[in-house]
Image (cartoon, rainbow, N blue to C red; front, side):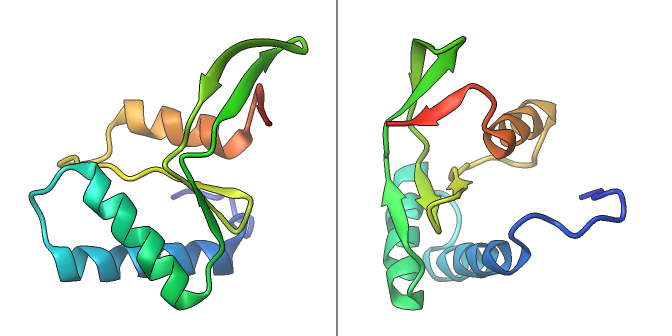
Length: 110
């Protein structure tokens, strides 16, 4: 990922999350739907002492008015959205979703 020479946000925490995801993938393998990977990540996070919330409902706000809801798979370390995906490769759509989740534009916790 291009970070324009800047240190990535939450680098240490992100490395722990990626390491956890790789551990899950290496143990469960490929070919399942997303939910078993999500649930396994909750277990792995617990084993590693990583705090997380599963399926936390968040309000989407526009000019302080609720216009919808967003329910990410996991929120790790109370600040990083972790959304499990079962896909061949990351495309523009997924990158757009990740950037929206990263910026938190219009999303407020409830």
